[in-house]
Image 1 (cartoon, rainbow over the protein chains, first blue to last red):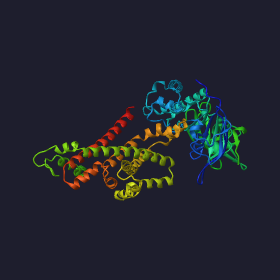
Image 2 (tube, rainbow over the protein chains, first blue to last red):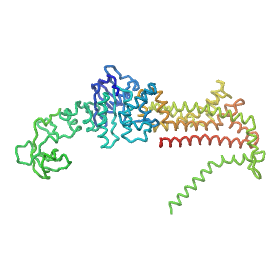
Image 3 (cartoon, rainbow over the protein chains, first blue to last red):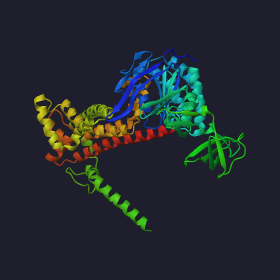
Image 4 (cartoon, rainbow over the protein chains, first blue to last red):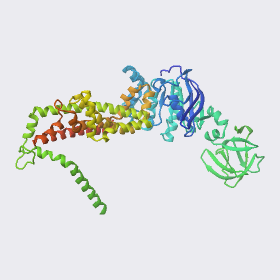
Length: 331
Length: 266
């Protein structure tokens, strides 16, 4: 495996994109490290895809700049930036074989036939498609097309690879498999990955860092565990994982369902007392809905193996958690 | 049994309509086989004499040749300009572009006689009357909108991400057009070319205004043949004209079918 060249750090400075009165991306500044797996996570309309398209050069920023290793590329057309891109729906060239698709970037750079063939072999090997090189894209399954798209985008050893919801069209089981492959490929090629998704599990399982986006702005940036354990806003806490929100003296606290201890009432001191309203069995966990004074329902996840017998609805219960478990949110 | 009655009625109506549309053109076939020396249906015997006369006549053959040269040249020009124009409008995709598209389609809306007069007024001072370049240019202007329409229809179904993918992989705009966009819209380009060829091949109104002696296309010679005498050679020429048009259409249809198969089986 040839290692790509050293560059690949991106610096976004106050990037803004407006469509008439609508601001799709609003004053986003972000530093992306070389070789990092960075995920832009957000619901639809959060501006994550627009941001990616601006990095790719397919959309022009209204204001702000993009720096690649310190050099401004904001005014550079997409074909000069030399970034790899994996599109939603893959966008494989339907009239070319798999090999011609993968070798396209080298072919338009007028490399020799022998060099292209060798590199295409290497890439097909990387994505484990060596036997399918002469097929047409239409003859491949969704997962295979996705890997061809990845090989095509990596074939010219770009400093940055941009991925726009590349697993969106795959079924859930295949998706988890491909996540592991993607992570493995990222480790092997060392390219900077900028990955767009609305799927929080994808973001948590693959990323070095996650950028949570909302309404065109960055809501919070951090490592997966940092974001999960220390969300700063209600949006971050509820978009990444599940959370209960407790209001005490004007402050709001986020409390993850699995960080609450649930026990039958009267067995000791309790932070909150409530009554089991409903319980759902998920194999590894029991998910309780507990009604507490004030009428609110609190979600509690109990480890099915260690948590003892399921408690039927109507049971009075005590809820306890440590001080560290409840995270105070901003504003 | 009611739906079947309606279905049968529909089929009958469709056939009647088809005969109504096609029959006038087919009349030329029996007339061209008449053994008489004036335009008439053959009564007692069939004869190929008018075909012999047609293919033996230096004048008719020269007209065939001229029509072919003009049709091929204007097809190439109209296909190139119409395709480029469609891609340009597709890339720009703005309100101003749509206004521009409407303007470009005007030659289809304007009555041919008006267009012919406009060409005449314009071409006289330019010295393009009665010349190949003049007729080729006029037929190109008339045919380009046909190409614009068919190519635009193909582009409407073209995934814009393919273009982005190509550019993202480092291909210039020109390379992207040649290697990704054109192969994707080939059916539209081919269809446009066939329509352009046919429109030039049997164009008469503008040709009447723009040609005198040195350029004498096939439809022009037929027009004169009918006006000056009732020589059935005209009918023979009409049959040949139709056959060429049909062949052009068949080539396109077969190519389209082969491509559909090719995509399916790789």
